[in-house]
Image 1: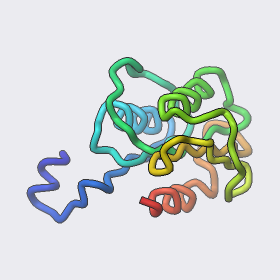
Image 2: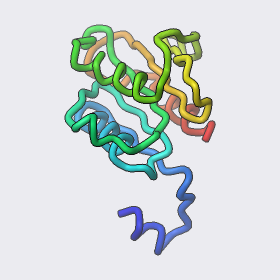
Image 3: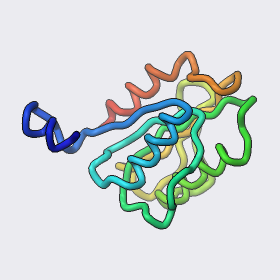
Length: 137
């Protein structure tokens, strides 16, 4: 898809993003992991269904998990991308409320996590938060 778009449209190859919820969020992580051309991704309610050893991408990530769905598989997803980027467990609070950005060695590859009220749903603030997250690139 990317080569076709690049040949038919004006595409900034340094600003390709992926975003999704549930299976789409999991797939956004697949893209961020398996493709070196994904600059950043946003995922909600996601789990890992890729071979972590195959990761070649260096995408920044915005990840959200509802407090009622914070099961080990979803926490593992968040923690994989945090550690894959070399980030510490320490973080600082950012807006919106409930969000943190981890202390990462590469400022061009931030990993942000937002905990939201509820379960397996896209949070009310999610769309604007991802627009703001992607805008920094």
